[in-house]
Length: 422
Image 1 (tube, one colour):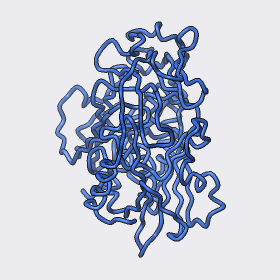
Image 2 (cartoon, helix red, strand yellow):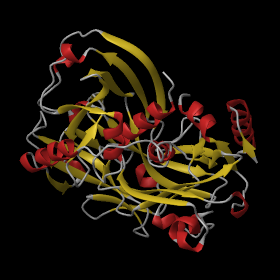
Image 3 (cartoon, rainbow, N blue to C red):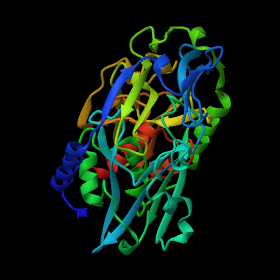
Image 4 (spheres, rainbow, N blue to C red):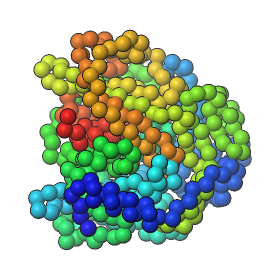
């Protein structure tokens, strides 16, 4: 089945929701079947040692206001595989999209990539069903592809420790694609329209689409920006280590949850999930933000070109230390930097363009929704520190393909920009 309009997509998605039989219940951390705390409570892990674990982390960087940050972190050393199969039908691009259930999604089912799986998932250590279409991405040379792209990119480094995924795109002839239940071919322009709706396209899909929507768009290598980022990494290195949960300052640890003592912040809670998926029932910890995330990206005319004001900052979980994000990042109080953009403290005339809300990865985060705002500004009225830099969209696209250069949140904003006609 292929669709060309948002009306058809929403009708299909609503039908999948009506057909679903999912139940998500909250439980104590100590009630998580097959999950265990280590002897000294330094880690909450699955008995197979697969999937992911929760650890206590301390991070030091001179750019942080607090100098040292302590928090729980999701540790998932496996490189995930997320990828889209796409094809050309009557000179138009179509993407094979999945209606995928995740326990943390705001409305449970969202549009996701063709494949979205950890090594534990597609290796079937959970004893469940095989991941559909995984062979196209593990052994692409066995198929008659017209295009195959593969990038290793970081994922939500404020919450994951050293987490990366392979973001892949494979373009195949239509006759080589079998369409299974819960999958549909969506035309590219239609998918771009849906990107501007709240909480429909999941985080992994947005990450790949930030590249997929721009495979034939001009990109420009930004050597100066890469040197700038490398210099920050060299001059402000990050030091990390693990701590037992009870020693995390400003955090409360109990059988029920691990929760930040102040506002805003987040908590680690437990879920029991019953679902029509690879496995019928499972238990897992999940991370829930107390507040709505907020990201803003400024654009303006610099040297007669439209440019975007990007912001470099040290992410607590990325092993490459510094990444490039949107102009304004309001995740929580723990990650604030010592050096702020002057507009944070002074009113500035902004022309609001548009805003979209998207939820973060529903397999690990519980209804974590972020607001993405876009503004036009007068660059001459902004006095920014050395942590900010104006770049063209072509430069942004080039940076987006470099491992550890661009945050997952900025990739979402690139996908939105690639979808917007304004």
